[in-house]
Length: 402
Image (cartoon, rainbow, N blue to C red; front, side, top):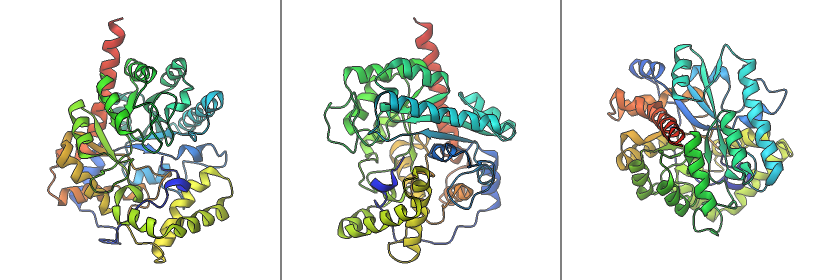
């Protein structure tokens, strides 16, 4: 998750085209027949609100069932997130409450949603014209340094865990904190091994470069970056270097491109340094609209920044920047190692990709760039399913050998 108040104004690009691109009939047909998976969405924070109904179309936010159907989304990983400042039993309880909220949402909408824990479940959802709901825990601090909690997460359906969030935890360094462990501690390596045994994908978004190296070295299953973009294009510590992407590819993993404007463009990172008062103005506006409501801050932050861009208070970022990052990642890591991890409802979407209904534009843009239909299918979701399948295979092998 991109925390709106901490990293909201990290990067935007002057627009290439401010209007949504028309999608060809070929792209529409390809998109509708493909497995389309988003590996990171923060809509879970809204599910905690008893008054929020995922089954109706909303005028705010990026995700709901009608818009997911319109955008052709097959599977979505709902993020289980709490601040990395919250630790111990409190963190565990809040994580379990969010897992319960996701499971309850699926239970309440059986005609639209299917709780998925395997690649086969995702394909079944597609066949049944449902949306596969998966879960990822965004930050190892939520397991409370207790492997039994990790096992509980797995039993409840969690299928990836991000090793850190914005802060270091007691066994791993974060990309946005001062290193204290030199990567993974011995216990951190045990966490990775247990994740392998449980079939939980090791997520390296948010981790330090050294933690990434250690995770790659220890994991027997492919790892992925659930919502990261390319550091060569935008020098954010949350993004991956070309060398990291090559190592990820060698491991069999996938970089899932993040749509947040602050991870797409270097230009606005530079702008932010020159105009520090802009972030304060945005934060004040979010506070004015939301108070202390966390879910409101996420969706409203997205809209406030868009309002600022439209008013000319910020440079504008166009959705085609997402395609630029996809294309760069393919050139570096290979076609089998790139996917989509939007960070919807937890970040600022670029203009032209305001919500999930715009997903077919990515399919159309990739076809226009000369990608084959089979290669587009890989980026849309098949690469992610392969990693999920490999995590399942490694889990079976490790459990059968004991």
